Structure formats: C-alpha cells, structure tokens
Image (cartoon, rainbow, N blue to C red; front, side, top):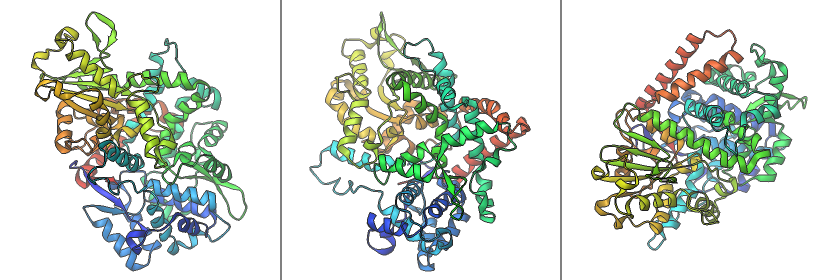
Length: 599
C-alpha cells in the first residue's frame, strides 16, 4: 500500500448501536423531515467539510463541529476517536452516503420537521445510510471451494462504487476531458464516424464548450475551501444564485442556459430517481443533475441551486457534452470515442517517455503486414516490454450498482474480454498479441524495433476510461479469463506476466513518475505488493506525489482560455501563480498527511 495511502472505513449505525439498521428504518428517519431542509443539510455538509476533496484535505474543523452537533457526547467522542485512529481511520461522511440521503429525501421527504433546526437528531440518518451501502457479497469469499472468478466478481461488485467515490486529481480530470473534446476529437475529423461533440453541445444548449467549462470552473471555485468557513458564518451563501454571475462576462441568457443544464427542480429529480434508481450506491441522478433547485419552504419559490456533488459537477465538463451528442449519435459516438481515447492515451505515454530510457510505440504493426496491429501501444525498456490495450467503454448503472454480480460479470466479459459476436476485446486482444509475437518463431521478425534477445519480461496492461478498471479485484478477475486463452507456462522463464488493469486516472498519476521510474518497474512493484493482483495500482507506493508536467502545462493553457470569461479583470500571472502554489501545497499535505483511501 502506498506510503501516501492509509485505509479508511465509514462509521455505521451498526458500530454505534450493535445492530444493523434496515432501509425501512432509514426511510422512516428521513421522512420525519421536510424535503428541502434535508437537501440543504446534504449540500451544506458537502461544502463545509469539502467532501469532494481527498480526505486528508477535508476541513476537519467543520467535520468535528458536525460530530458535536449531530450526536450526544458519548457517541460524538467515539466518532472523534475514529477520526484520530490510524489503521483504519474512521470517517462519518462520504459522497455515496450524501447521495443516498439526498435521494431518499427526494423520494420520501415530507412536510415535517426542518432538519436545520433539529441537527441534534440527524446523526442516526447518516449512520443508518452507511449501513445500506454494502451488498453482503464478501461473506464466505475465502471459504475453500469458492471458485476464483466467483470470489473476484464478488469483490469487484462490492468495491466498484467505493472506488468511484474516491477523489480524483481535478486538474488531470478537467484537462483530459477538454483535450479529448477538442484536440484529439478534431485530429480525427476525417474519420468516417466523426462526431463533433463540442459543436453538437453548442447547437443544443447555446453554450460553447469553453463558456461551459469556464462556468463549471467558476462555480466549483465558488464552493472551494474559502467558502467552507464562510457558510458557517453566513448560511445564506450556500445556494448558488444567478446574481453570483453578475461580475462575470457571461450574458444572462447563457447563465440561464448553464443553470438549466446542470440543475433541476426537486420534483423533476424525484421522477428521474423513480424511473431509474439502481439501489443505494447509484448516484447517477446527481451525475446528470449535480445541482438541485432550492425551494424556499415559506414561499414555495426557487431560491438558488444547492450543490449536491461537486465532483459529479466537475465531471459534467466532459460528460455533459458527450451525453448531449449521444442523443443523436449513440453508436457512432461510442466507436469514435474509443479512437479519441486511444489518441489521448498514446500522446500521454509518448510525452511521458520522451527524454527517458523508455521507448513508446503507438499502434505497433507487424513487420511487412501493416494491416496487422499487434496492440494499441507498446512500451520498451532495455529488458522489458509492456503490451497495452485501451478501452473507452462505459458501463451501465444497472450493472454497477445493483449488487448483481452476474449482470456485472456479463458486461465486463462483453466489453473487456470478448463480445457477444465473439470479437476479441482487451484481455483476448492482449493474449493474441503474445501469440503473434512468440508463437510463430522469433518476435524479432514480427516487430524488429525492439531487441527481443534482451527482453526478460513482457507485461500485459489494460487501460480503461471507466473507473471500473481501477476497482480492487479487477486485475485478478480479468486474469481468470486470460488463463483460459493464454498459458504463461508455454513461454520460458516466466516471460509473460499476468494482466494489469488500471483506469486512466491511475495511469496519469503513474506517468508523472516516468522520469525516475519505468512502467515495468511500477508494474513489478504492483505484483510484489499483491502477487494475485487483487490490489489496484492506486495502492502501489510510487513515492512522493508528483504532477505530470505536460498535463499541468495544458491545464494552465486551458485556464488562460476560460478564466477571462468568468473573471475578466483577473491578473493572469497572479492567478496561475496562486494555482501553482495551491497545487504544491496540496502535494506537500498529501505527502505529509498521507492520502486516505475510503473502503
């Protein structure tokens, strides 16, 4: 496990009371309160605790205030002790929990008590919510006789929502989305399945991509660390209002278009949840609408927007335009987006390898047969090779969140192993690459750009756009499929490694270390940490946190496009100097305070 990572678990009603609560009990508790007031409390916690940030960077002062407000002294003292523990650290609040409480308030909220005025009674709501988030699939997982694939899919099904709730590197997330929507999409404009995602978005919403990104950036900044303490002194600052855009250069009609795109009324969101709720862990409705209209309980009128999920809001900078384009270009877009993702990953790896001893080959082809692709990408050091496949497939909410491991396994197999038509995907493509290189004689004749006589290890690597690829247990699961189509014992001296699966966010973090550590070395550390590869790449110790210099420079270039739209009088030099200082401070705090991985 990373030196910057300590495990953390969430506090449960079961831990405090000695028994597990039921969903019916939780619904009964939430139903005591007026709907709007519960949504307010959820948005307030998100803002005051800075719940979207890595746990090591949370506002612990405000967190402690909530423990004292929500619980009687014996319980609050127990929870404070959990916060100060180390292995594991115990936390009360997290994004999935807030999403569940907000969903239940929307579905079952009444005209009852004002939750803001009855804070001392709210603690049980959040403890009970934490009781509802596991599917009970890990019981008996280690019993002798349990099939390896069955054990792995149980673990993956339990962990997928947990790891989705973790905090990404925001600059990486924002930069990746912008570059895929602009540079890499436009580079493929001549493709037969090209979709102008940014153009489609502007046509349907009236917002250019940079205008939309600028407002996302500005609103996210508004709810940042400074706001977390201001809201304590002045709660009325919590809702976002149209007047908050008064000092920007954005015309009122575009402000309206933006707010209408990212927020919705409570009644409309209630119907959205009823139509497509996939269980306690499903926060998809808040990915679609991360903000919700605040309805004044006395007047019944809209009085701004409450931020329910900051990270879902940030993700809208990419996912919003994508899903708008998907309405008219579904199948074409999915194929095209795979090519866009491949272009991004290839450029990321090429730039990370420049100036190092690692060579990167994009789209390597068999010598003399340009129509035969070996794999999507190949990394070569003096004595190791990494064969890589990239997959942009996104997974359905009803597969991820229902706790139905059979349904999830089928979709994983379809998208990352082989599809229903028998076409190779991910795992089987990597197996085919190994056979192409080694089963026909000399790999030198297949790909002469590498001196294969020096290669002692060949690593297999699958990179996914969906964060599901980073889930604990995923690599181990995919290796149960790999073993059916490739026998490593067929190759001498442990030449072929197991398959390593990671999501793009973890690969971005890893590339920041390429100047001092090679990809094969990182993958070797992963296997040493977890020989069966049950662990994920995010758990591997890569040393002190680093930033990818290329992504950071692109992030600043994007900022110089979008900042003047919302902050027209900003001194750009000072603005970005401040951003760089904040980023360096974050790296220092993560290194000293140790990042926490919720589980």
